[in-house]
Length: 279
Image (cartoon, rainbow, N blue to C red; front, side, top):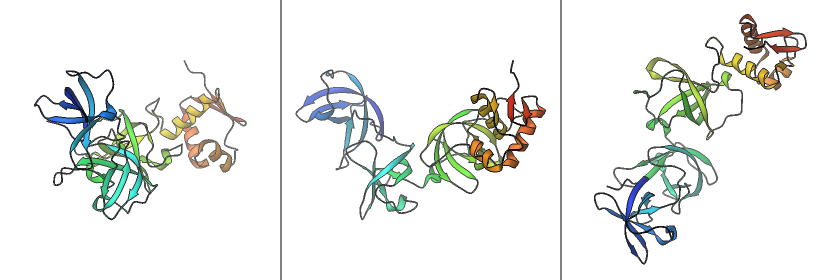
């Protein structure tokens, strides 16, 4: 059977005036229009194509690369809005539809949204949704503490940032552990810091070099290494200077460097912080 909204490996069966007809192992056929044909394609070849629905809801194949595939999340731009819903740019000729019922708030042209793409069982159409929580699964985790994971930032909250983990789970990055600008749609690597009750995932953007070093201390340690072993902020620095250099409060800074000092990882001087030579 053809997998709508996904990549398919299909065999070129015949050539017609409108394009090539491809078939799966069960003999179901789909058209690859002329605009996607190349001189290298020959009858009998097995090729990789993306299959979706055209404007008349008929399956059609393309060699173009969509920005999202079925059952995954992506950050897409709103191209148009009609009385029926919104339409997103997903890299293909026919825009991706988001009905009003699948919009967490009304979409406007030019906005960007994190969306999930699924095949609606009632209409058999590909539909996008911004109601992200419905499509995240934490009951059966596929990750463990310490794992490196792929993240898609979804939204900012009072606690920090909600992130989609490995296109499957929901995770939280705490605001006081973020030392860079983050916004919805950012894709980056992270690490499973802790698995809490009900399989809630705490995510860190920093890989801890030592188990006993908290993310803030690890951030300071990384900054010292980047600065050739010396960081020109200290206990006597103003809160403004510390925040400008490290994006943390002076109170948090003092607590973190105290821990690093006790572990013998840094030396604290009036002029700044020195990295202790590492073996």
